[in-house]
Image (cartoon, rainbow, N blue to C red; front, top):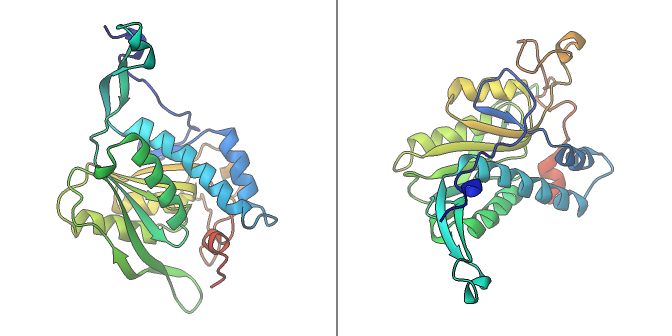
Length: 270
């Protein structure tokens, strides 16, 4: 018999209030904010940066999987079943037959994608879990302003039919790379994804507006919204209230932001 306390899960992560719509989840987690503050500090380099980003994405992946992925009824005997036949956990767990893809967007997203891949292999059937790789970079004009994303190469499995597709990319700045990646997974591969989910440490108002203009069905998770270039009056309001919200400087870097996360993660300064 199922214990009614575990017959279903009502799990939802705590979120800060905002007006960006139900597809945006800004996680209210002081522990994660503390780690992220350290990761953004100019005093933090390797190996500390790698360890902090790994911990942050382990936490974020747990939130996303527990909230967004299908759940199933399980009946699992425990070790006590040897002496007590009734020692069987009957309740809710993640459905192991869920098909999933995590997309590593080089270079800042490479390590976060590996973290997500490893965690999904722990709770899903590993034969149904895949990791893809995209190699792209910001495309800028003569003034250094971001005008798009340039693809360099990709290693992608063939289909996305009924798969949960995750994009763990630390910084959601302009949205150009994410729009390009999501467009490819929607339009250039076999099948229709079950759900598309972006997983970020930091996003900007500009990012949210851009990705949802092009892909309103994209689900966005982030630990922090940075809108540090907004007028003081805007900063006193609930996020998403005013179009004057800004988090990007003139060359589309995030303020307060974290600086070059991809550079620091890889110790590569080009």
